[in-house]
Length: 92
Image (tube, rainbow, N blue to C red; front, side):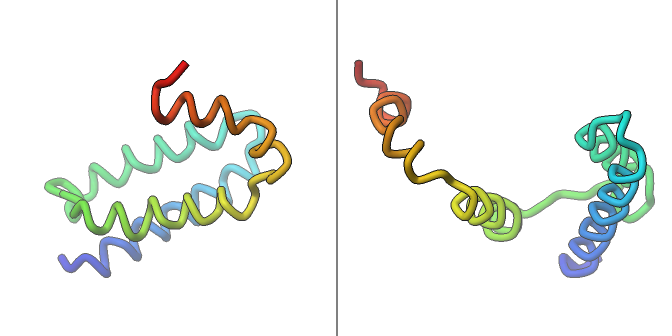
């Protein structure tokens, strides 16, 4: 199966999971995503599914980083710069 079809199926599963998460507020969305992943793993198309590292890097991580960058509070980031610097480089 091509990467495009697998990605479309994964995106479809995320959309369905988001719809379910908005309807059922008593269950955290993370658990619903995990359940969707478990269900997908039993489908014949995903039994031997291996995601290429490039797909993970360019499609999933880049979108998450862009979203976090858009919602970052600049004042809080500047205020906590020392902590971020220490966490990144391990200096005290």
